Image (tube, rainbow, N blue to C red; front, top):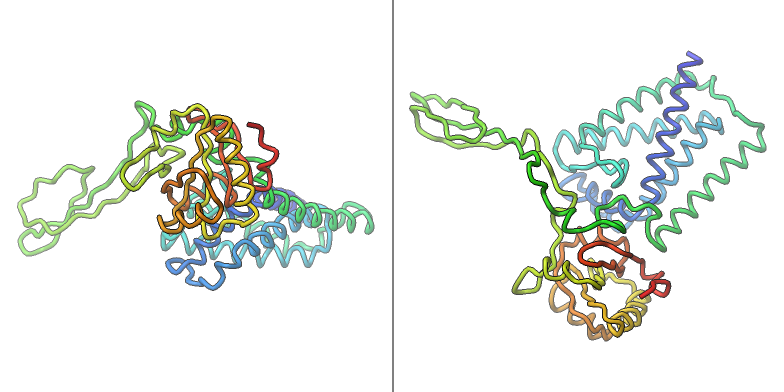
Length: 364
């Protein structure tokens, strides 16, 4: 039992630190995932949506800190109880989203590793077993250092985690796991390679045969049945190859301009997923930065999901000298974790991106 507890302690502690750090690297991204869970079609606790970012930071900092506490043996009973409560909650959440098919990606490892809800639920079940082992054998969890060093390390883990979370919120994630990272070519990320695996679909046809409904399963072809057609249901068995970028577009009221702008050599895209929620200080900095960029020969455009009236008003309020085109809100949030933020491209390849706090440091 002693050795089983030690193995569980090491594996659980490391996994909590890695999972927590990945989410702490992008707390805004995790808060967007929490908003999905809080939505009316999932848990229906929409009153928590305005607090999603704060909850996101608290949860991921706690996750990292508990992992450290477990490894160094700080306050074993408190740590194990906290881990147990957290994993019970996460297990319920992943089971609920998997069983009711509500959230397609749990967000456990952010954008670094996509897990289906059932994969996430399986992972949480394994962790639940390991934490139950720790719960039963908590007496074997001893500090690996003296009391003072252990306390200092525990305190530092909390301070460093908080600082790191604040830092990436005020700038951008230190590690960008998304398809819009610096060096990525957006047309390549949107393309489907020749010979890529196609989706596998299963069709369940229902026919009335001699007064009795019968089902016939095919891969898409219409079955030869001596009966009256009733209906058909389609199930995706394998999604096949899915491009990293699926919903990105730059649209005016009249046309899709995605390909046109992605051919530009010096393009700056300003992301404002909702112009009414843009930071006022950031918008003031944006005006100065974009004016300077335009004088240096850059093509500057905005991307937002806001309506035409709101976009016209924000242009007037801040004197913006560029057009703001339509882009899906979720996509705009994904491109740059800032409102406003900028992404710079050369013929579709990302050369730089910045939070509004860092506009002054961007070289043109």
